[in-house]
Picture 1 (cartoon, helix red, strand yellow):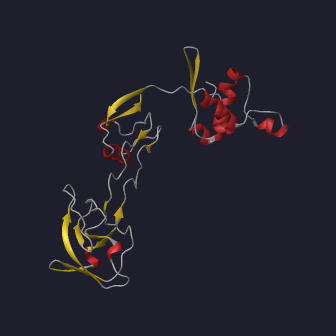
Picture 2 (cartoon, helix red, strand yellow; picture 1 turned 60 degrees about the horizontal axis):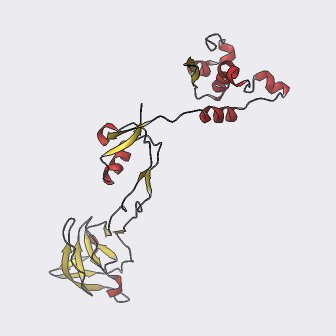
Picture 3 (cartoon, one colour; picture 1 turned 90 degrees about the vertical axis):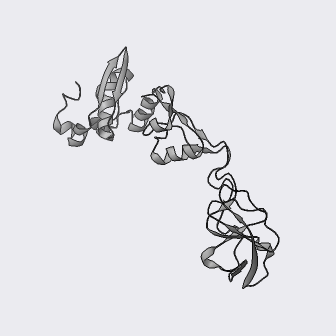
Length: 238
């Protein structure tokens, strides 16, 4: 009612388009304030002021220097009286667009083990001489989901993207940067330790917060929850 009685000149077109919605339910004042600072100030003055006994700064008060309740303080007071809604659990497929009710914590590191970021050959840089070119025999192969072979000293292990890194190996040579002749591997550039290797916990350490409470769940957030082996989430009730 208060906003309907305001004139166009007093409110302005933007405030009119984002008018507040307010009412009383069971003795409580309920108000949904618009995003415009001017419109919020009007809402505080015309609707909420009778309940607080204070006002935000009006145009006249700005000119006279009278004490007033500023926008930031009004916002703090409003948010201070907000009650948190209860939570419910829902499967991932029904959680899109909902708000996460509690921190989603990584139970295990992500990735869970050191693995290759490229198709190529795993080596131990300590086995190489000072300068190239280099030649190593290829012994063993590491594939995702298969048993990891040991990396024998002064050898290379064929490895594929996502496959676990053999013990002792600390670098991966891209297959495009090497030449294979039978069981022998040839390459010119000395790789740096950690090259094309994704380390355990590189994305998320154990017990790290993967998604913070209060986050609106997007497709990416739900994909991350699935990667963390969560079939359902605690979300805020609507």
